[in-house]
Image (cartoon, rainbow, N blue to C red; front, side):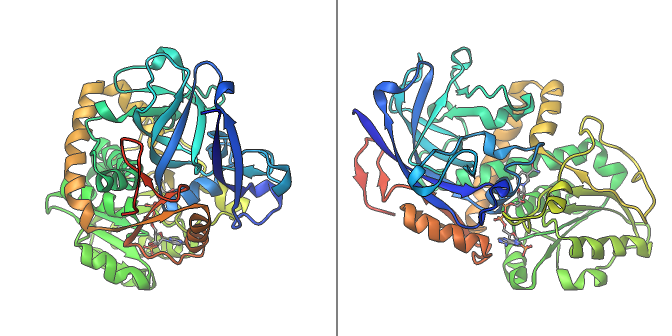
Length: 425
Ligand SMILES: NC(=O)c1ccc[n+]([C@@H]2O[C@H](COP(=O)([O-])OP(=O)(O)OC[C@H]3O[C@@H](n4cnc5c(N)ncnc54)[C@H](OP(=O)(O)O)[C@@H]3O)[C@@H](O)[C@H]2O)c1
């Protein structure tokens, strides 16, 4: 195995002046002999792609997030691609260790992690972190709370690993989004839903993150509260059909949303749409019910070429260490959005709960998700660089319906666990 032929999907950096919606495929080769000590090569078999990845791209160069700093883009003179002008959008996926220069990390191991859209990635491994459940990619240039992104999990010891193609697909699609929803519910619950809110309104209700949160909050409320999903006209049917939300309201009809007198409510914004948020805040100003928190959880409307203003609205300004409890701190005429960023809250919870406690909470929640989520989406697999490029363009044009869950591979077909190529599913 003298060299491996790689194929990588690169996107222009916002600062490059190039059109960020036009990806470039770059071929390169990895000389196996030149792989450095304490490095591994992972064959990235498949990865999920959703609005979440587009948010990573849009925030690729933002100082607080720096999503382009996880995997460097390759250099290719012929295509004018360089790490200075291009970035790699991080993706959650499954792969196999193809080359290992790390003790106790074995060739052929199935792994899950925060990879790049490529056939292969070469990453350093911190030898001291190699353990039963996984190992860490050292990224001293990034804040310490980014650890969840640096962890590469070993499938054979992962209690949440489902060793089927379908199980892997649902895992790479939902794992990052569901845990965000799970810890967001936990964060709100840490303040008893801000002193007893009984209504939670969630925008971009058709997104996997919002559906997961709606599901978890409704379960938490046990019938003693209401979860409302806000969505676009074209996605109302899909969201209503899920039966995850108690009410589904179109963005156009936000002003008609019914609030009970003195009802305390929380708004969780997953859409990041100014016009929708304006309507929601207008509702708060009406004074029927009390908006006790407005949370910024996502920004599905944030395009790869979003302006600096749009991106800066997402940058956390307050610490999650001390979520305010009780009444919303401010008048109903000046609502300030609180950002929720999962790695930061998880870092706080790691100081309050033991690892076994966190693991057992997550394992139970995972079993439940895997029971529920197959009816929420239809997985569509896309193979090969050209097809993935086309699919990317459909995503940025907003042409992928919420029921469609995309799993991409830069390979032309799947490979069985024993290494043999197999037909597409
Ligand atoms: N804070 C955190 O730690 C954290 C962690 C994970 C994810 N998130 C964020 O949560 C958001 C949701 O991600 P997801 O992967 O769950 O989304 P998804 O499943 O891909 O959801 C797609 C939905 O987004 C809305 N949308 C609006 N404009 C769109 C466009 N141009 N193209 C595609 N969809 C568009 C539509 O919903 P409607 O019609 O219902 O609006 C669409 O159905 C992302 O912004 C992500 O970054 C945040």
